Image (cartoon, rainbow, N blue to C red; front, side, top):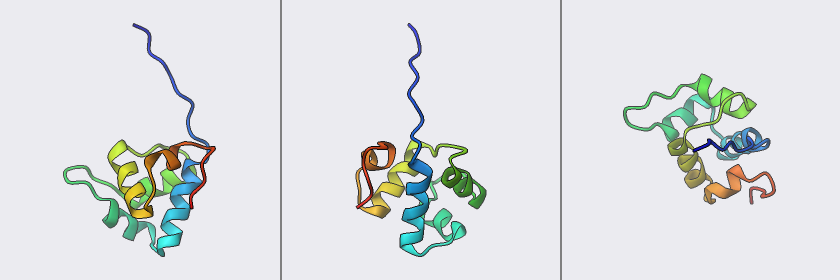
Length: 83
């Protein structure tokens, strides 16, 4: 069985930053909102997600989507825009 690769969403980082800015939160405050039990999250991680250097894990993406009131699809599909 071969492994299939997907392309990395190019607009994800900008969308994540926009969500944080619209909520009026610092990166440290965003960490508190996104914290998942037993999985450490740091403001440096938020910075890397927003810069497009790393992709957040699925649980973090789900929390971003809930905070923004959108489906995860809106975050990962470059064709869809945040409302």
